[in-house]
Amino acid sequence: MKNKLAMTAMLAAAVFWAAQPASSQDAKPLRIGVFDSRAVALAYGNSDEFQQIVQGIRADYNKAKAANNDSRARELNKEGQWLQIRLHQQVFSTAPVSGILAKVGDRLPAIAAQAGVALIVSKWEVQFQNPTVETVDVTLPIVKLFNPSDKVLKWIEEMKAQDPIPFEKLPLDPSM
Image 1 (spheres, rainbow, N blue to C red):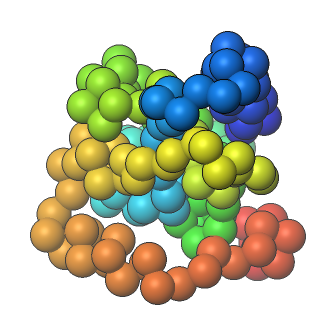
Image 2 (tube, rainbow, N blue to C red; image 1 turned 180 degrees about the vertical axis):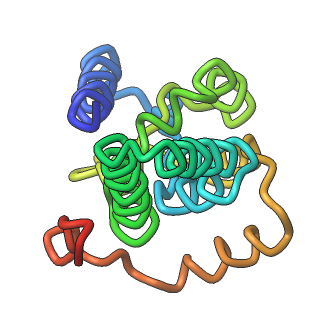
């Protein structure tokens, strides 16, 4: 999905530039919405929906333990560990958040319309930007779809001062 978004962004930009007359001075710039995927993951990880998922896994684990179903308990324990690892990769690095965005995908067109952008893509996926392309930060409107608390919004604001950890430096083994 990550590469699909990047390819879509490049295709949209190429189509836009190809359609513009070479000497067009009054052409409107292509506007692309960008977001910090770390902030989206942090908001989702602190959302009621995510907490319900974690509680569900924990409840199923406790039921499996009570029923002496050790294989199911191990499976659920591993699932919980991987859920945490993936969320850490998304919050502290630049792992894709396409699964998270799919939960609010029906509301992204309204954010794009409000921001006047033709496309929304993770800011970490932008590899090149033609000077005629204008980027618009849509992080906060996306984050607000997860109803973050003031505390989470403060963390997101503080996050802006931190560079993401390179993905290859993150642990991938949940037993670490």
